[in-house]
Image (cartoon, rainbow, N blue to C red):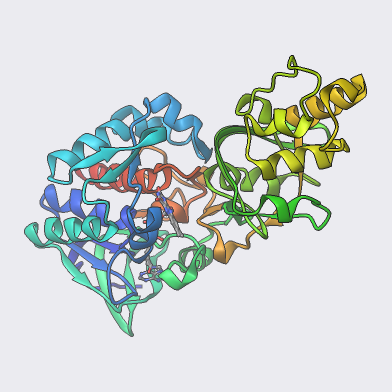
Length: 405
Ligand SMILES: Cc1cc2nc3c(=O)[nH]c(=O)nc-3n(C[C@H](O)[C@H](O)[C@H](O)COP(=O)(O)OP(=O)(O)OC[C@H]3O[C@@H](n4cnc5c(N)ncnc54)[C@H](O)[C@@H]3O)c2cc1C
């Protein structure tokens, strides 16, 4: 097929953190860039992120940062050798986006407003004369043999030397990220690995008895394990919230991928670390009082209920087996899990375009020349904590930098 002369050096499809970062860096190198976004506004998902505050990155040491990724940490080693999360944070600061740190090394814009991040991108791109077209839903990639030549959007064909596909995943499709990235590259021979919720709240299995006691209770930095077939398949120490339907908060949400990847998985908490118990007390004190000295009453009731120990028992009247049962529940507070929120309600997806089809130094497709695939469209994901937006931006930076080689 014969295509017209390219009108742009680069077309970026999708204006999330991956696409916007790639457009910014490519324009800094002087490339003529067009950004196409199907929504009316840029960065819709980013505007929701971090509860509207945008947990944009994380300042852990890069090695520790990579350990908090659920998919793609090995693949990203090459990118990290030139541009890691710490250099990303410096880049943002040097370009006028001031960041502030919170617990668990999370970084937010100082104004704590996700819209501020989108405006920052808009201003940077405007300063570099990047053309942005919104309401532009790319329906097809134009290829000549195995070489991308441009895109088809709203019935128009637009040509470029390079195309960056940064369409996100299919989590939260109301934000515009509706899986079109997977569909656009399927006819070009790219495969998508199994898609599943990777960061999402968890449902209780119906048989979790103390739900009414515990809903609304939150625990800070509790050790959480995912157990399947009597083996620990994942563990994390983070905050947890009991809700009426299940478990939420960063700890349980980080367990979602492990829950989806393993049969009959359940959650086990080690409460003894956050509520150290001391039974060496006067024998006339009731067991309920010993527990409520270190934990909320509702949790004490739940522990005693699961240990089958009567709350009105005095320490002196208890048997060795009662203490052992309480210890067992404290060290292994089991919560049967029925599943995770579905993909459309998941914060992040596990799965995406297979990484073995992508060059790690440039994010260029191994199947189609001059096509690069970025961000969450790929099988890349991390826990909550700023990892996902950071890796999306890092992919954008690396792909854009590869244009100058
Ligand atoms: C509620 C929520 C809260 C989150 N909070 C955080 C957080 O605090 N920190 C964090 O690190 N991560 C967070 N995440 C995850 C994070 O937002 C995503 O991982 C990240 O936005 C992915 O970036 P991306 O650029 O790859 O894709 P996206 O941000 O999804 O952007 C893709 C863009 O492409 C556009 N698009 C799609 N198809 C087409 C097409 N055919 N033509 C044109 N445009 C197209 C979409 O409209 C969209 O704007 C959160 C996610 C959710 C849902």
